[in-house]
Image (cartoon, rainbow, N blue to C red):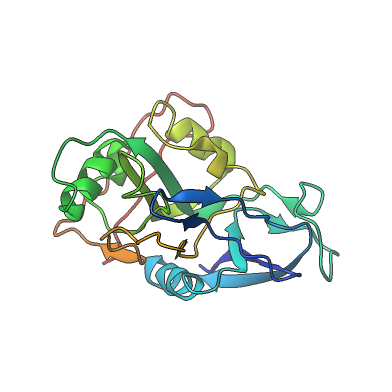
Length: 228
């Protein structure tokens, strides 16, 4: 089954990426823009999703959203709920921000494992794709984007119910919320922290398929599964 990932490209070439200036890492404001060209890219598994993420890492005028372009819309369009409809997706990006961590900040695998442990059991001991967020290494805590492939498409409502109580940014499950995929810029004396920030695969040695009662009428059973 093929899925779709919606990619927006700034019509005016706006840089949709964070930037830090000087030795104090002063964050710079960036404008997302109001008008976008839209491209819907087919994806079928974690591997095909990862190829898109690797490509977008070096394309700062692009960003991802969960919504699908409404039928009949053409040309440069605004990023609104009138132009993009909420759509169940078999992929998801989970944004974990400022998760307290008192371990070794150089042990990225330990940090990733700890981050995944904060999620429902279906997301643990499975493969995922990750990208440390722009502020990782600048601000305290674990700050990472975790990309998963699910066993079936899940709506924004389902994802919020599934992840209820977890330390994640629920704004990601909004049809027009941008998913930053480009690497940040460090300028005028700002030195990039020694973090492997580029999108990477986190693989496990075991397969674990499980279901969980989420106490939601719309979510009887979900399984994020490992791509073998």
